[in-house]
Image (tube, rainbow over all chains, first blue to last red; front, side):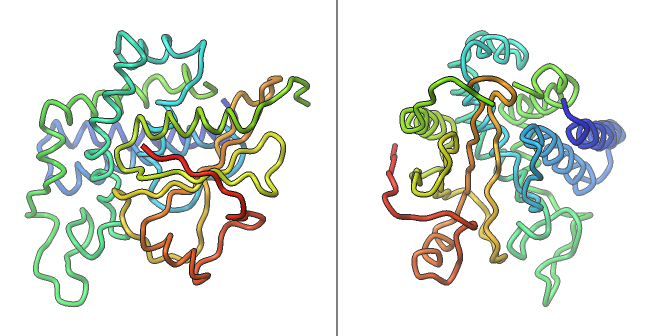
Length: 169
Length: 109
């Protein structure tokens, strides 16, 4: 792991700890969702820094992170599958395919990717606000509470906690 | 410096297959070998699940693979929306510096 990865990992872990605290305390969905989105974006960028080149500044990146985990080459496949609680790498790849729509929805939970729609920070639409995040029931939050969504949150947790075990893979 | 042989085209084919297998948002992948380094794979991936972007700068993700080993190589991935792809083709948007669509190879599901 290089020094850049270390810094991004630290911030991802801090954001994720805040997410877990807020989730446990029953904070508004907007705050809980925002910190999960930030943690997922930052662990993705920590991983991308393995190249030594800065990743794009955009808030996007989490879906590419999952895509890249799904392309890991032999002989690391079994180890990575096991790290993320899958028995076979093919099962891990199939799971990534099935959960990516939720990952895309989580990635879009930022003001600049929400296309003037629901986002966890600002009232929308921008020109004539009619909704505010603090009282909004986010569709992606409902998806995250489903079986697949809970599994995705568990994988994000592992991605953060066990980063040092796959950062260079 | 890596010393082993590296079959860039077959590696690109393999990566494209893996990406299409793990991401339902990817409609197709264009592999762009023109002007790329010997150990550099450049992909444009048309992504139907990506949020549309208004920014004009297209930045690929540099995904270094097996860095420091004999098999070291680079995989650059640029996800684009349909709107961005249309604007790229019309010249309204620019490809990353040094990239070319000439002799691109398409991979689909």
